[in-house]
Length: 494
Ligand code: CS2
Image (cartoon, rainbow, N blue to C red):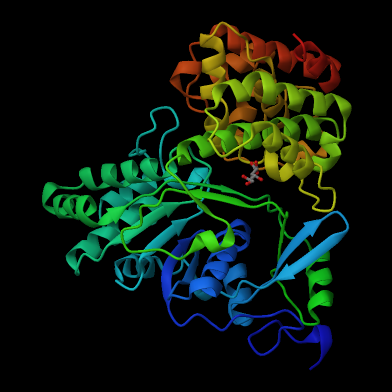
């Protein structure tokens, strides 16, 4: 076979260098999505190039068989396409040793976590994957999956898998390990540790106590802030990458040139030299997380919702509208920035300049539908804290309120309004419930009261802020009656 008909594999990889296959795995990764493959995998490749080490990655997809089958058919290889306007550069991380689907082999997840050769478990399971209640921030023991996991048998929730895996590890030698969350959650390491401990504490003492002592002695949960914009792959990218490689890659990952990883250096079982790929080891991870989750992600949500409602398919198209750009600049400066304790090494002006350049990357084609999806689990991380801080300081966070109004207008449109195809395509676990509320809402105020006032999505404290809820409601009505541009005018400079 020649050219595009052969598949990417260890013996066929066009002109791009492929590092030798890792000898052994030291990392178990839960959540084998595109983000992991363009982020942690790329840093691990740089680390192994620099210093070697048995840090191959076993990738665990939660449900998707497609990615696992494709990777296996390609000897675990795939290309990362780093896309800037006018240039695409390919690299092949080549750091995975195996991949499987957790739903098909849940017992193996527990066994791998207990395997002493695994010294780090990394997680990109999304905000939704942590089985906690956004209202209380505690483990959601009413969730039927968590309840079943607590009851025994092979665990299906990520927190259940971690707890049961660590339980088995404790009783089979107790080798040290670090559990590293790489999701966009505030204090993600501390949060993960709290949930695992809550799970263990909910077991009968005879079962959980030994593991809790092992956690104290030999398990660390460093926090980390991850950043790289990684859109979903497309058939066109598959063809382009395959043509550039000269062999077929069915699972390339598109990514922007910018990448960042700030990590607490607390690895009980050692770690790869990720700094070789540019990772920053710092005690200020909490500050990096705030900066990223609010300035980048919070504003990203605003751009996605206003963009989708204005008919923009992509983020660069959305930010290309003068009104949306003005709204993004205003929410950054006036509402998010005052809530953030900027890390010492970051120049916030330069960070913001880069944000606009990143959002404007038209070659990447990041879709408003993708960023707007799952708002019910994302926005709770991005919005309540900075909104409450502004309200406490006597300021109305108009553009944060507009973000919530944009979200509701996309996912739960008032009767008789059509948010357009990009909003209709957004997926969200809360969509059906919110649509029911919207169907019987009298107006925007009523809808905002029911959603924000109900605590589940935005937490308890924001639910008590009537002025904020009123503002969200007014803006829902303005969007419905007069459109996005009028709602922006009502907020920018208000
Ligand atoms: C985005 C993020 O989809 C979203 O909600 O805001 O996925 C964003 O692209 C990444 O966090 C960038 O690091």
